[in-house]
Image (cartoon, rainbow, N blue to C red; front, top):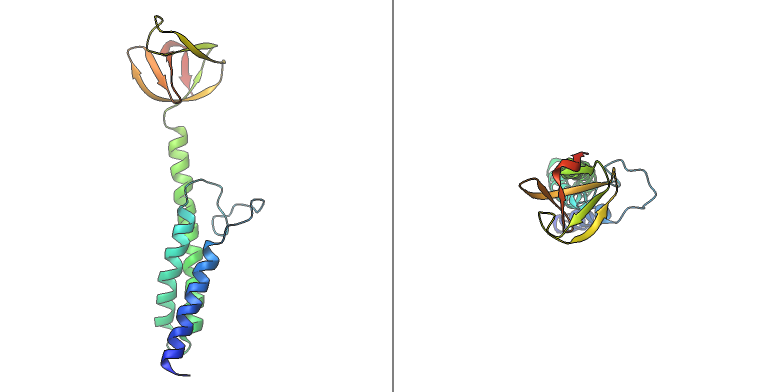
Length: 157
């Protein structure tokens, strides 16, 4: 085969492997970090695409006799590794964001429109209900989604 044909075949193979890495995974498959991920964030697909590109280029250079096969195998291995790394980054980010600033109401609470009892009631939190804090002022905690609750009736989640 000519060098031009082999290079074209290697490129097409690498693009096909990258496309396969970007295909959405089935929702009911078990999350293993390679074929699908149970954490939000989109890093798995980006990792798979980058891994496929780097793996395909490396594979075509390492395998001088069969560049197309080397590109496909390299792209597949790179996509799997990139996907796994991306999913682990998504999980770490989700865990960090999930536990940071998470609290729970220790009793039934009124959500106020401002930091004080002189502000109107805009909602309620039930005892044990988790919420995310986004700020504080004095003894008042501002909750995500709007409103304030008294810090004396708030515990760690």
